Amino acid sequence: MADHSIGDWEIPANLKRELKELEVQRLNLQGMVEDRTQQLKYEVEKRQRIELEVAKLERLNIIGQLAAGLGHEVRNPMTTIRGFLQMLQNKTDLLKYKSYFDLMIEELDRTNSIITDFLSLAKNKPTVLKRQCLNKLLANLFPLLLADAYSQGKKCIFEPGNLTDLDLDTNEITQMVLNFVHNGLEAMPLEGCLTISTFMEGENITLSFKDEGMGINPEHISKLGTPFFTTKEAGTGLGLPLCYSIANRHNALIDVKTGPNGTTFLVRFIRPKLILNG
Image (tube, rainbow, N blue to C red; front, side, top):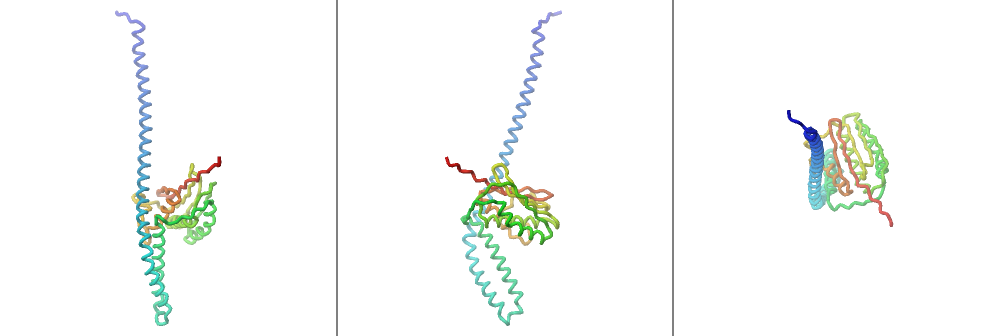
């Protein structure tokens, strides 16, 4: 019977210990690989979102250039036509056609409104920024929004958070809010509630519009903000592009979260950095 030294018994023990150490290293490496994979996935998705946003802004710029050159040329003959229609509708022998004249003038005014939105997409549209509180702007506007909601048999609430001031163009932000509220109310059934809220989110100030509609079709998400894209029968497809254009001029980004219980549009403004006098 062969003699075994203590060193002979230590070899299997050392192997077991090394195997355990290798298993621990393997698990650590696997965890590192999974973490890195998640990071890369996040970066790829972030890059895709940025590319979509850039492509959307490029389309808006092209539309803006077309708007600047075309809008005024179309408006001039429309103004002439509207003037003659107003003159003709007051003639005694044409009073029986007054309803027709009213309809034509109404459609001309609607067309003019579309052109106004179209021109608002122009790249070089001047923006008059003023340091102010977003909550105060929304509070002043809220009675109008509330009346609009009640007239449709729906509800609207405003939940302001604690915010720092922003550099805002009052008219443009008002237009953006009206567009988002209009879309949100249209998306909801009777008794639905639209929630407008503001809050700090890291370094950003976020303005949120949350409806209780049926959500947006996933295949339409990437098309949101594209000029003339709409799923409404009477829609022009210029409301959301105008919102994206206004957000861009305010150094803000628009994010969308949607599902079967409703849709939330988030407008994230970059908070102004404080300049310290040293």
